[in-house]
Length: 467
Image 1 (cartoon, one colour):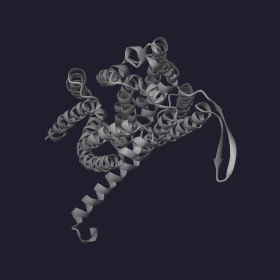
Image 2 (image 1 turned 30 degrees about the horizontal axis):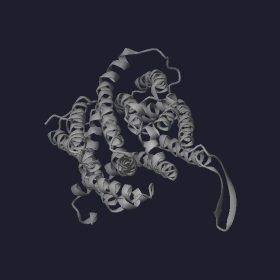
Image 3 (image 1 turned 90 degrees about the vertical axis):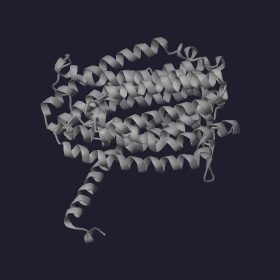
Image 4 (image 1 turned 135 degrees about the horizontal axis):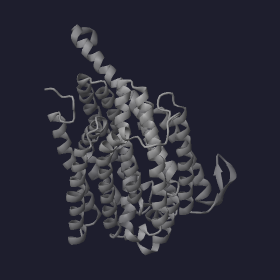
């Protein structure tokens, strides 16, 4: 069809195709990395689920506190993402090295601090979260082991973001795949007892430590530690963002702008993650079945947001590059391309989630009560995915140019005024159960969609906007 178009339209189509190809080249390794992480999360949940509903609830009971910790660490990396993507657009190698040197310092401080925090309070967290007393002790031990290697986990988060900001999404992907593979193998060895397995007419003995939930935590902790060490080595050897030759001394010319970008995002992640903790504690109070259904539904749902968040990283990087190069037209072209791609991807993932919800929940539990409840809430959220996808992309573009204050306000209002207040009223005042809590979550997502759509249409996300 293209050969019948006028020359100017041919050029537009060729340019659009080139832009879309650039987006997908940058996005696919991140998407694949997250697919692998989610696949392993599925396997973890299924393997622990084989131990029973109590084991599933124990693993999931403190999951939102983990989101609070890792979400805050991810927020620290947003400033480096924005600054490095812009410095790459400027082609300023000296500035890139200075930024990475300060990132190493932040990793050390944040990693040590969170290690001390998790070690000191890990056993108490299930009690604070109103976890059922029958699983509280095992949930506390699981959390403590899982979050003991916080220094290498911090390195994985921040150094992985730095590599992606420099356009290298393949290295974090490769490290992530290896980490996830190691986690699966260690799960098989640590969770179950030594057993005889039959395959293709052959029987052989598989060794096992029989550690159950504790084995799952140990497998993940060892894998995370190895991943942090590996990605630190990859950063050290990288030709553009290596920290070689930099000094571990605070540089305020870097830390001040980093803090201006990261601090609102830290408050956003902390505030929303704390909201997830409160949200989960209210669900935990609904009982073991609701907790297990919520844990499984969260695990299933996470796979279907992967295209959105993979594209968000690409949006932040490419928009940041264009902003650093002062290319306003390029920024508009990228934004116009990201939105429709994101909508199509999220419609496809939402449709798949709606259709496959019962089967997917059934992978993790044999209880019909849990399968029915989990499927119901998943089908509810599947309908809202395309709308939430727009929010994800616009927020990514704002991260790329360093605009993090407005997303902080939007997310805090949505979380605490809509999701938390609504869930409290529905579950505590009117005893409406898990379905009503997820309805409040969807209302929160739709609130964000309206606000971010307004930001995009008005063009206020773009600091270089002239018209």
